[in-house]
Length: 334
Ligand code: SIN
Image 1 (cartoon, rainbow, N blue to C red):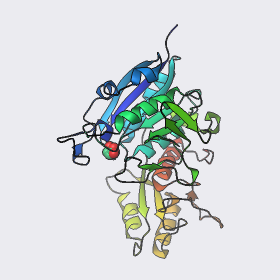
Image 2: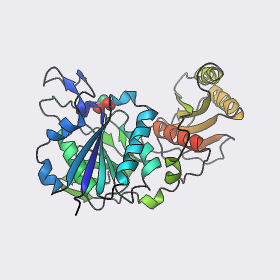
Image 3: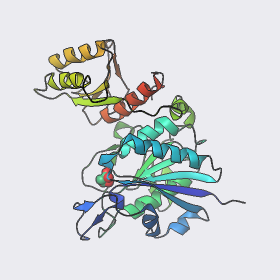
Image 4: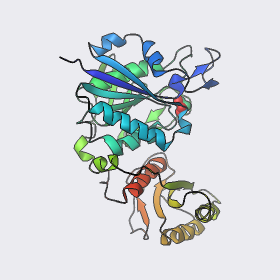
């Protein structure tokens, strides 16, 4: 009988970072150590695997601030390939913390219904692998534990002992090792000494309608969607500049996500420029710059405007891009 496998896909990040001194937790280069070497340095891994095989594949070696759609595509393809292997119980992805939430949400939209409920677990570290007390090895061990837990499903993120769902997870701290938060939703579970204590159910795969469609998008060409923020004195100049740039050498602008003030509001001049952009076919998504809560609308939105319940601006951008790629807006609200 073939043994069960956990596949670990490496993409770089601080978890794979190297500094010149063990006491330096910030002056390091991310994406230096291979995923195979990271796994070899995790104490207690064979106990945790309980006879399962651990397989690794290096997908990228980057600082996640430089994350690109091509890497997301490669990750999606790698997940599909490994899920086609019946012996794969789950997939772990090592990732930088800075854009982990975007990758998690992208995979949530594109993959979750594909792996027959098998989990994809992203993990990371706030300290480089060379730190006096690196957090990466524990996070990897916890992520493998979650990947093998029979209740795990969908796309999850594991950091500092907490398990978050892809929809709500957000980097909330610049420095602390417990850098992630799920806002009002809270974490789904905690990993404690090799056991997963669930507080909420992960989103079942069947709630990811629309996901399977996204897997087959061809050609894979990301539409240009930019994010603008409303702030005191913001005015309309950025929106106007974006709209005029779309006629130049850059790929044409297809969407604008607004990180609005409070409940997704924008200043009066920006509202006029956004409505003008919408009338020329540019899709506008309203999100909020607040760390918690979503945009709650009482009145109908102007034509060409939309909101996504509870999504941050960066996740709203991922979703709008996928919807534009699919030329459909029927991904169920989640
Ligand atoms: C990165 O996101 O790749 C660098 C920062 C980190 O992983 O904490």
